[in-house]
Amino acid sequence: MPERPRTYQTPRPVLRSIPDHSTGSTGPTRPMRLGVAGPVGTGKSSLIGLLCRQLADELSLGVITNDIYTDEDARMLRAAGVLDPARIRAVETGACPHTAIRDDVTMNLLAVEDLERDFAPLDLVLVESGGDNLTATFSPALVDAQIFVLDVAGGGDVVRKGGPGIGRADLLVINKTDLAPHVGVDVGLMTKEGRLARDGRTVIPLSRTDEESVAQLREWVLRILDRYRTGRHVALDPGPMAPHVHADGTVHSHQDAESDHTHDRTDEHDGSGGGSNVGHPGRVASVR
Ligand SMILES: Nc1nc2c(ncn2[C@@H]2O[C@H](COP(=O)(O)OP(=O)(O)OP(=O)(O)O)[C@@H](O)[C@H]2O)c(=O)[nH]1
Ligand SMILES: [Mg+2]
Image (cartoon, helix red, strand yellow):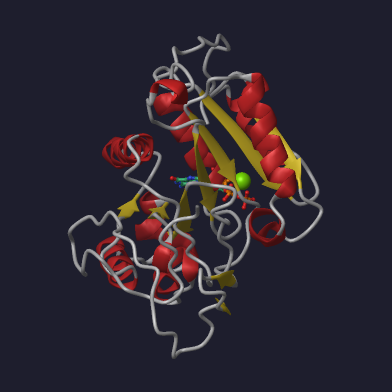
C-alpha cells in the first residue's frame, strides 16, 4: 500500500451519543461490528485498509485483527498509515481462527469492547478473522454483519464450492479482479455464479486498482451501517443453527430435516436474482 502522511484527524463520530432510553429515544447503543472472513491471503487486511482510507474522515473507526501466532496484520495496517495506530489492535488466537470468531468469541469480544470504550463513541469496528477455510464464519454474538472474501487467484470454481460464508454472509467479495486475465478467470461468470449460490444476495467484484469497485464497497458498508442504526439490520448467523429453546420448552437445533418451522428474515438483496425472503432452516430471525 502506498504510504500516506502520518497525521490523523479524529473524525466527528456520526453516532454522537448513547441514546437516552429514559426519554424513550431509541437507536444503537454501540457501534456496528463488521466481520471480514475468508481463506488465507484473499485480501481481508487489504480490504480493511481500503475501507479505513475510504471512511476514516467521516466515521470514527476501530480495527481488530486476528492472527494465530503473530500480530502481523495489525502491524501491516498500522504501517500502512490508514488509521491512528492505537485504533488497530491484534488478537493472537493461538488456535484455529474459526474457534476465536465463532466457538468461543471471548478474546475478540473483550478486545472489541476495550477498543469501543477507549475510543468512545466509535461508529464502526472492523474485525478481521485469521485466514481460514470455506467453513469459517463469525458468530452473531461477535459481529452484526459479515463480509466473506474470495479472490480470483484461488480459481473461478471456488465460488461454486459453497459453504456458509459464500452462501449467506451479508456480502461476498470477489477480490483481486485485476489478476483475472493472468489466472484465466472470467470475473463476470464468477460473479454470476456467486449470486446464484447466494440466492441473489449481494456480490461485489473488487480490486484495489478499480476505483469504481472500491466505491461500491464503500457504499455497501454505509448502507448496512444505516440499516443497523435504524434497526433494519439484524445479525444473521450464516452457520448452522445453534441449539435453542422455544417458549414451550422445546429444545432443538434444526439439524433435523423435518423441523416444522423456520427462523426467516428478510435479507438485503442486490436484485440480481433469487427471492427476497428466503425460508431456510438454520437462519435466525433475531437474538433477544
Ligand atoms: N493484485 C492484487 N493484489 C491484492 C489485492 N488485494 C490484496 N492483494 C494482495 O494479496 C496479498 C494478500 O493480501 P492480504 O490483505 O494480506 O490478505 P489476507 O486475506 O488478509 O491474508 P491473511 O490474513 O494472511 O489470511 C497481498 O500481497 C496483497 O497485496 C488486489 O486487489 N489486487
Ligand atoms: Mg490479513
